[in-house]
Image 1: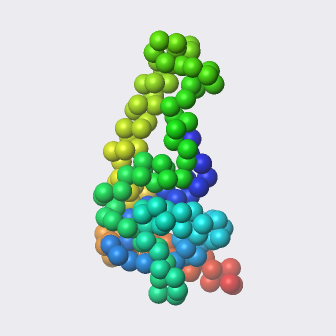
Image 2: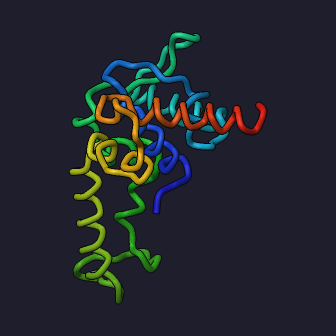
Image 3: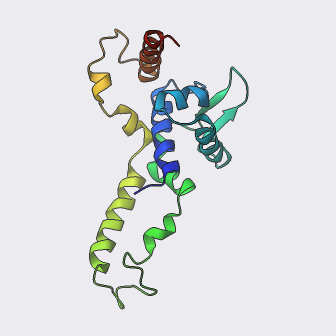
Length: 168
C-alpha cells in the first residue's frame, strides 16, 4: 500500500511521537531499533525534515525530532511527502479516462475505498499510532512504562540486553 520509505518513516515517527516532546533521537538509534539500514533511514528522515515534518540537528547531541506536536501530524502529512499520492486519483484498472461519467468496472468500488482511505490517513495522527497498545509494551514490567518516551527507552534496554547476550 505504501512505499518502503513511507513504511519506514511511519515506524520511525511513531517512536519519535512516543518520546518526550523536543527530545532528539539519532537516526542511528532509530535504525537500530527498527532494524533498518541507517543511511536509508537518514535519507528518508532528512526528506521529512526539509519538508517541515521533522527537525534535524547534526552531532552527537542532535538527531531528529518532530517539528510539531504528534497529535497535529497526520499520517497523510507523512505519506504525502514521500509517496506520489496523486496515483490514488487515477483509475485502479489503468484506464486513461475514468470518472463518474466514463466509469471502469471498478470505479465505484475504488472511489469509495479511496475516499475512506484518504479520510483515515488525514484523521489519524502520529500520537494515535504511538498510543496504540503493542504486545511488547503490554508485557513490559518497567515501573515507568506509562512515562513519555518509555517505549524508546525500553526498546533500547532490550537491544542492550540482546547485544550483551550475543557478545557485541
